[in-house]
Length: 345
Ligand code: NAI
Image (cartoon, rainbow, N blue to C red; front, side, top):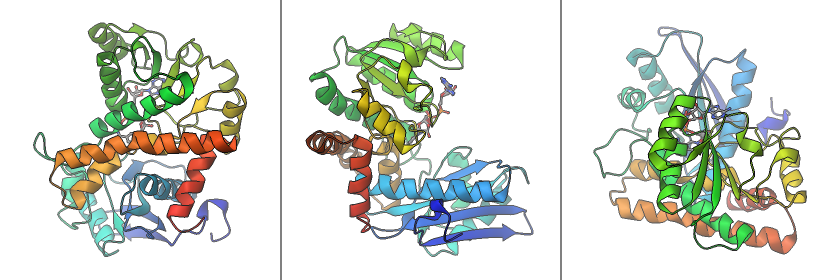
């Protein structure tokens, strides 16, 4: 385990098994240099335990980088709750909560794929090291998506300035892949700012409805990556930027919230060679973790949290400036900055 590439100097890797409820989970802690390892819990059915461990390791390292670049007093960690066993229940979440509690605050959980605010409430019965709990309208915390959409919007603006020399979105053509919780909020903000939108989602009815509401064009999910546009914004899946898709792109900027957009680091270099500016996903999509971490830390002023989310624009500008100065892909610059921040530069 210590020698496998994904281990990458993790501080700890925990496997929990609760015989009574059947709860099994992996909790990976990449770095607590800046604070407790913060990162959501994923509920997923993996082909085997090794695949779950690998996913937890990759995701927790990603959280170290994301939290460091967001300026948070938080390290990187991630939990993976193994699906395929008992269905989700209050008891299962209680067992997960006890596992988290046993780490004494070195790991703080929140929602990720397959987990809801209600699950967080059940986890919170066993531990206080949980964020993303439901809140009343206008309070800090709750679902992370609106803050992620807002951060993606200002992050895209930083890219627009660098790639198109534009300060505003009026008439800028943005193609959005995936209009779920984050993509929809982003599309709404862009429509208000006067962008020309083309939307796609595998749920065509959803795309058609949003297109109608915002006056946006809609294309099939298989077409969106190749349409001619100023900005391509991935907000659905990971690994979509790869040797098969990059040659067909006809955009100047890629700026979206989907996690792990580059299939490999080489794809970042491929985009760079094609003259397409890539906004590193984990810098641009940090709005949600900023919001849920603020809740965990007891911040009560939504204005201060929003100011932190808006800091994403400045941070990306900094990444783009250094990338231009050194002639390197922005993803490599962001990784380097993040590693320095966590004391591994
Ligand atoms: P979601 O599940 O609400 O939305 C995803 C949307 O993408 C769905 O409407 C789905 O139908 C669509 N989709 C799936 N495959 C597609 C394809 N091949 N082509 C077009 N559309 C497709 O998820 P959410 O929360 O909006 O997250 C979107 C992305 O952003 C994910 O990669 C997620 O990991 C990432 N992210 C989300 C954050 C959040 O606060 N929700 C925070 C940081 C990252």
